[in-house]
Length: 465
Image (cartoon, rainbow, N blue to C red; front, side, top):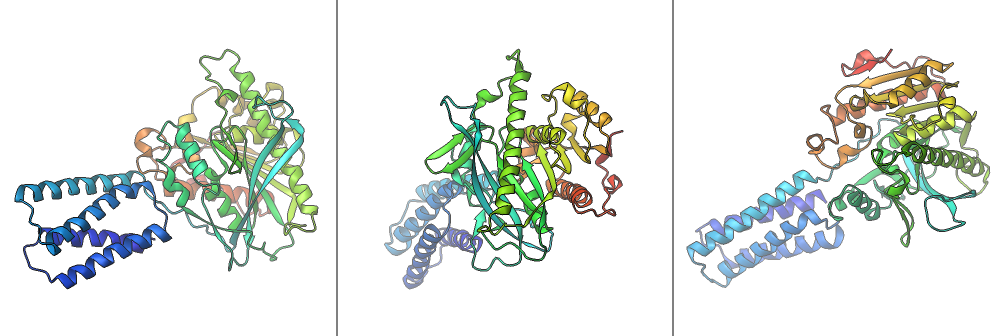
């Protein structure tokens, strides 16, 4: 795709050069050039994604082709003033196009560092033991969607999946949620992941430890694909959950979509019983995690599935951001199937104080952004850590915001200027988070005693006593 686009850009420059040049050019050469112009455009339209950022470019591209044809082949002479106006307008459109490409680029997902290739597969789970509380329909069972990332030895013959597996629906769900025109983030639907649909799971090991990832309120499962792919490449089976009605869009099929229900967590300032709503939401997320574990237990026993006996259910780690991190803690406090928990700005405030005071009996690691350095959540978090019977550590990463623990870096280089990202470089931060995450899970799920987090490696990372 990049090569074809570079050809299109080169053709625009060539046509501009012809319009500005006073040299006589043979009509045969012009016909060849214009034929290439048309052919390149058709190839791009037919075989590659036509994202909205290119619409302005197409306008300039076609306009230049028509003007070159009229001026240089049909010998229609434009008056000097008209010619200058046309070139000026087209130049302005090109500047706008370049600005749009800069603001909404097509980034590539970071490459995982592990030795395994990555397969992925998604499942819809219906929990008939729970009624859905976030719809107006009675007797609706709770439904969630999960995605597995897992080690693979080969991906030959299998389709590479997009970063956003559910594509435009999720991209536009996010646009709607943050108040942008629906089409603005459409380009992210065409970004490819490093994973391949239903590639065969590796037989290098009999089974693999499990990490379950929970997104925050108004997030979605693919906001943590970078972590999922990194862990899968290192020999983990990773499960990302779309928490229905807490996700910007959960896609069960093209005609069955559950969008974010903003009433599930109303505005704190205008809601006297805000913590009641918050506890209900975190509890729902927590129940989704337990539903997922039950499903994994069944999947592990399913002899027709490639995951049969591949899931090491004696080694389960939880990884969560914000509301998802709070739900992880809630599960870990009450479910002895969990072996370790890692929370990024884990929102534990909604959990009942009597549960918080019990503390955790499994290893836990909490990573806090600088923007969450102060706030009422820290009261509950500190109580939890102090009362935990097994090592529980809290680190803060300076120069970060709450959203820096997601893949917000995939959207625009302007995110630091509008408050979504902090001052720390996104690539550098991602490397820090991946190192801390993999070291922690290698230690707690793979029993690698030599895996120890060394905060002295990074000036921005501080252990909070």
